[in-house]
Length: 30
Image (cartoon, rainbow, N blue to C red):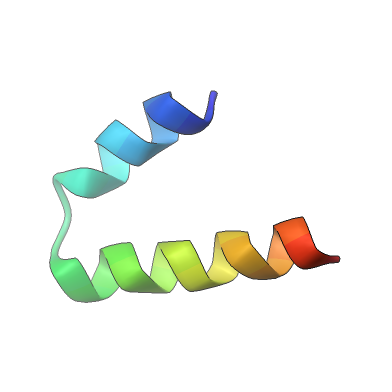
């Protein structure tokens, strides 16, 4: 699942990708 979302977000702009990483990081921490 993560790889699928990862590939999908990898096509977006770097800023959006970083925002996705930060948001996903919060989800994993919680």
